[in-house]
Length: 407
Image (spheres, helix red, strand yellow):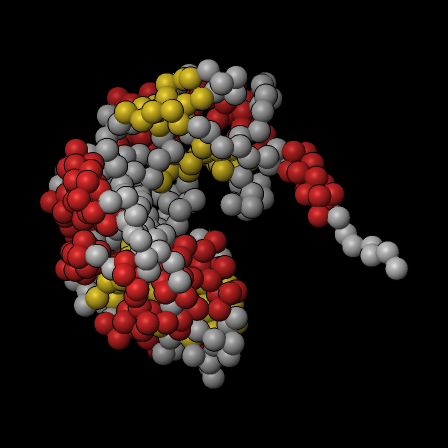
């Protein structure tokens, strides 16, 4: 008897058509060469173009710092290009241990555990600590990795309105019989605003829930000595027993670290599937990240430069009447409304020599497409001024010009 199943190829084609109709198609841009804040990028016609990059997460400008690159090269020459095995088999190198200890010391926590990515680290935390009968309460704008982690853990996932501590409390009270975790971004990656961590810490303590903070976009940028949004809120490891640090953003390298209470971190090292069953980060990458952490701790001027750039950009952008969101971080979203409008503005900026990513649903809510402007300590103040001027021109052009391709 013939089998009549839905055709996956047909499904894919239909979904692609839907994305195209909603200006939701995405393409990858090929970077040919990076030189500080400038990138040589392959255009739609294949011809290279040099663009001033305002969509990188390299907030401290460390990804090409000579000390970071030299550490990578020296360690690769000595220890090779790969991790060769999982941490619990033969892959745990002395450089991994040194990096974990350095970050624990920097963030003033007992322990740190190195992962290949922030995504894997979030999976590890939620899957190792939560089960079918447990509760995970999350901010509605949390990163996708936190949401996916809760779903894969099999726990009951409840999401509260963005930044609404009372909403988080209601969710916790509704299932008082469950072991519970409150999970939130420290800095929200698409809005650039901060979670109300002090209030969430109180709510978690009162409800006997564990507070976990994904501080991917905060560490290195915020707080005393760049210790992140948790330190900026005046909280310690008792209030926030676990937090995530990514190495591929402000620290300009690759990988992630979960930090916090020793018993919890040690439990992850023994039970987390995304830690146990994957090859360790190459030692050379750990060496690069270790060099970056030392620079981030020492170079306070990088954070001062970021604040100068953000304030300067916001003043000039507001003078132009651009629609900014309330953010004091290097993430400065410019609201565009429709997907087509965001694409048209991004194309206009590229014609003028600027690379700013158009962010559209489902990454952000429907009707809130935006240009996600990000600053690094390597940008110059005059470049922030010029970008604000170019954004105003792009806004005016977008009213008349449709995008020629999806991005």
